Amino acid sequence: MIRVQEQDFEFGTELAAMTEGNHGIGGVCSFVGLVRDIASGETVSSMTLEHYPEMTEKALADIEAEARGRWPLEDALIIHRYGRLEPGDNIVLVATASAHREAAIEACHFLIDWLKTKAPFWKLEETPDGGKWVDARDIDDATAARWVEDKSAFGGESDAAD
Amino acid sequence: MIRVQEQDFEFGTELAAMTEGNHGIGGVCSFVGLVRDIASGETVSSMTLEHYPEMTEKALADIEAEARGRWPLEDALIIHRYGRLEPGDNIVLVATASAHREAAIEACHFLIDWLKTKAPFWKLEETPDGGKWVDARDIDDATAARWVEDKSAFGGESDAAD
Amino acid sequence: MRLLYFAWLREKAGINSEEVNPPSEVATVADLIEWLKARGGGHAVAFADPTIVRVAVNQEYAKLSDSVAAGDEVAFFPPVTGG
Amino acid sequence: MRLLYFAWLREKAGINSEEVNPPSEVATVADLIEWLKARGGGHAVAFADPTIVRVAVNQEYAKLSDSVAAGDEVAFFPPVTGG
Image (cartoon, rainbow over all chains, first blue to last red; front, side):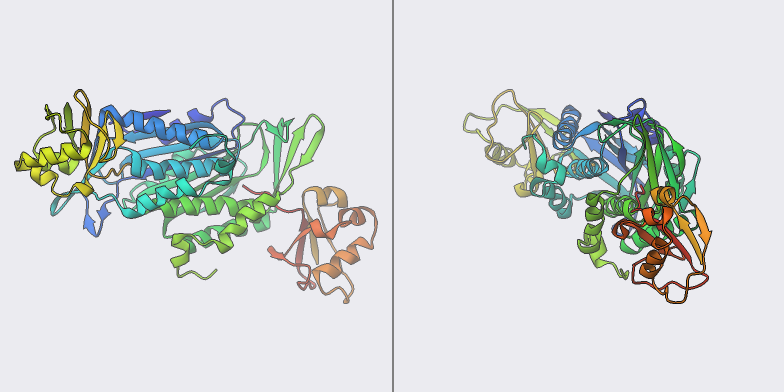
């Protein structure tokens, strides 16, 4: 499931909902991204996330479908916020549930890496020097590219087409 | 922080406590292990975790210290339950917080892999055929061994002795 | 053809969205960018370095060589930073 | 010397813990296991295949060649399955 929203989320509630009543789940892996109060050595007072609404939900749904094709998941969840956030605020929640811990962990890792390079969001950080658009980092492309070549143990055995 | 306890935990509360007031955290990765209702094709009605109390806390603290030495973590948490559990019950929570998402994800993955092979717990599954001790799997040793050789980007640059 | 601009491309172009009717020689994303640059002003600044511009055609990521046609929605933006 | 048994080793040995005073020739973990096996009964069953027995001396994982001495706490158990 994917959700794109301005309001906050409560991950205890979200994760409990994933596992509720499904006793085939052996592991749930989650990642929460938060706004830091410092970036590149500068104080950050706020971060505003802009996105491309007509495209975002489709892009996130494609990323979720890719993960479900690669790993045997019982459930997958992506919640991505937009709008103005402050340090300590939640930005994104990714969670994966599987019978097997490796599948849950790898799929969660994959989802957050691909969000970085494939989800149409842009971040404007407010610093003492004014607003600065966060640069995409080459390292993020490299990290995401790993999932194209280095198939995981599960991914390599998957029937899914890539 | 590590905790070894019979009672359940509520991971929303635990994760919120990790990030509360620390705006240097950019990512929190967590893994929850749960009791499945099936194992090796057999129905599991309960799982009883036995442990070695005098050793468990020390072993978990060593594992946590190893992770903190390898990755730049703002916080790390391991909660491991013992006693009689039923399908759907939580067994273990591992959570890591870092300024950087890769550090949080890799450290979380490391912690759960090392718990499998280094934390002195044993699991007795109740099935229609009676009680069965869960075998340690060779795959778990292989997975944990990866962290000895394949140092991560962060781990490889760490000052920590191994 | 509907054009959308995001993040600093939006700021430099000075516009969120616009409807355009490029001439028929504009057949690809690259052609469209050159045509927009030639309009000067904010567009010339926004597209000064096309290598750092990312594009989506009808909400799908596109390459410079991909086709564009009347009725398409074409979005221009910097490399994305989701997550 | 205090001995502890866990999981199926505990069940096979038929005992949780015991105090023992092995002779001075028992210098290593391997020696201790052989001495315990020689006692027969549940211990012989528990230690039938020493390669699948794991050991901790004073709450630290130990190898078969590691030393044991009076006053030590020695625990025997199957490979652990935490997490």
